[in-house]
Length: 288
Image (tube, rainbow, N blue to C red; front, side, top):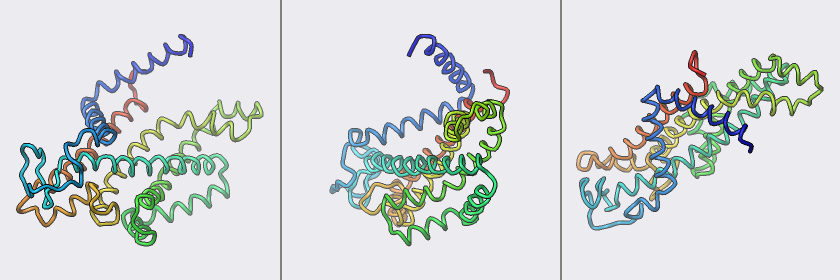
């Protein structure tokens, strides 16, 4: 990469950073999100105990050496919360990435070619959108069975219609622009126009939408784990931990509060980060 190419990119990053600094809530949300990401990536090296290790110290309150206390089996809750971050990021992230890829492809084809093909695709997607997300997830998981792969596939099915419609709406606007018309006049093929002209100009809104879907995926993974349709014991899944702690809330409330707090904190921080990302990538009257 040459120096003239690097300088504009550095200036662009500087503009992005100035926009983000104006939103302190977004900065805090991004920082908290990064902490959870580090937990997910380096969990095994951060935990003092294995997430399934049992000890005689049962139902110990938070303190030393168990920062978040222990559960009814003597397992360290801090270790289980940290280890559970990996599953949340893997399941939610994998499903979101897969949904973005499939939904973007469907939206590009539907919006660009239009007419009868667009009508068929949109009506099929409307059927999926008409069914409540959690209800559809329950039906699909009850049919396919509980496993990480099935959970990823189910979340993907839930979010593809939304992402496809978002992509389609952007394509409908972009395909009438001058640069697309110029590509058609040059005799460029449809694939070139879609992936070299249309898609790059739709990436910023897609990134924002993907981060929104990821925050929803986190909550959905936890909800399905709570209902027993996600990870199975002795997994450190946060939703499963909340479910297991329900009966012990009166005597050991820390068993429920810490995994539930981790879910809430990650969802809120992701939402704040998404708001900052929207402000950075899609500014309205912001400095450019």
